[in-house]
Amino acid sequence: MAQSVQFYSTNHSAAPVNFGEALLQGLAPDKGLYMPEHIPTFAEEEIREFSTKTYAEIAYAVFSKFFAGDIPAETLKVLCEDAYNFDIPLEQVYGKKYIMRLDQGPTASFKDFAGRAMGRLMQYFLNQKGEHKLILTATSGDTGSAVAHAFYDLPTIRVAILFPKDEVTPRQRKQMTTLQKNIHVLAIDGKFDDAQAMVKEAFSDKDLAYLQLTSANSINIGRLIPQAVYYFYAYSRLAKFPENITFCIPSGNFGDMMGCVIAREMGLPVGKILIASNANNEFERMLKTQKYSKIEPSIDCLSSAMNVGHPSNLARLVELYGGNMDEKGNLLKQPDFAAMNRDFFAISVSDEETKETIKTAWNKYNVMLEPHGAVGWKCVEDYISTLQSFENELIVSLETAHPAKFPDAIRENIGIDPELPASLQGIEEKPEKYDNIAGNYTAFKAYLLKNL
Ligand SMILES: *Cc1c(COP(=O)(O)O)cnc(C)c1O
Image (cartoon, rainbow, N blue to C red; front, side):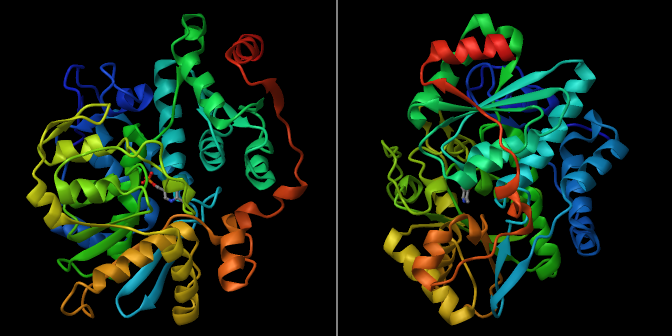
């Protein structure tokens, strides 16, 4: 029973590894992305039984399929209970159309779902090996806080976050600097690009090898498997097997979409997958033209977490459809585009349409959406307009952040100040701690050598 899936690299020149290794390594040694050699499936009966299970129990069932042999069952159960102790509201818009709010975690973003499992799993595998890691992250705002909360207070892991001192909001800064303990936060005198360059240089600096540096961004397979779980959850609460369900996913790096594809491959009856992008529409273009080109530099949009001109997870999707894409975005082998066009519906939503959708969702349905969720709902409306009849189609659109994280967009479009979720309340009063350093690598290296 307790078998484990092996993971191979999309560049096909690294040895396959088990889940724990893939998780700790992040990127494969040949710079490819780890993918499961096969995707395990659920029996129909198992999927039916999810309707009586809690979110944590469904997470346990999904994780077990991939790495039951690598971690004791009881440990994994407790880990899931501990990681998933918050609500996942499914809000009806009308009929069989719903919004799934993935914004009740500690940083009020869907990235908490992956982060909380990933931090705990890394901790477990590091303990087994008697090793430790230092996670380096550059942030322009939201990634930093999600990473900080995911790894907070874990004894084998330390985190160093660099942010450009004038480019994050006070609320974003406080989400990182009020944690302390194993979370080290550095304000640099420079831009986001400087912070990112400093982190990159540290990874290739041999003097720092003793620090066991690693990263926690969406190239890590540990982000994707936890993101398959909420698709099963939505199905278990809203559908009856074998009814189909359609999901709409506001997308940037396509980690969230890969979670849905994994759920489908595991046996979830997914109808269409709707991919909602902002002006960074390289995927929509690829489906239409069967050619791929990135958008460089990426376009600044209201839904800022989706400003991605070359999604790192695209190589994984291409692989699943029988093609191959290298880390630079070259399509070395064409995927089955006919199958992709059958399975996906992709559109690009402008900032004007995003604002309009924030207004209409509120005025027509009393549903409050922030910019990322509004891009998603607009995509649902466009998709519905292509259908002959839509009443019977079950559609769930993902809301990936809490409206209170984007108070200006909400205020300007519907004239309301969104209430802070419980997780963000009280943050204004907590004491902050962070260090200031110059915006160059010499200063950063000296800081790491002295303090970590
Ligand atoms: C990261 C993020 C996205 C995009 O998710 P991907 O997995 O990168 O496609 C969408 N919305 C919000 C609020 C995000 O933080």
